[in-house]
Image (cartoon, rainbow, N blue to C red; front, top):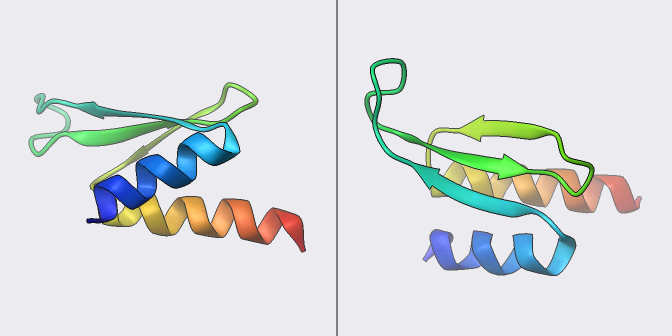
Length: 62
């Protein structure tokens, strides 16, 4: 559920999301978030991604 919500929220506000598979540095993989300005952030899962997006989007409006 949070995956679909995160993707919908990101699409509405110009963010891009990509799930990255497991690697030696990140054994469980991560979600890569690209801001509209081009900066990137790595988050551990879709739930954290949804919370992070909500904080970034709604904090910047007020």
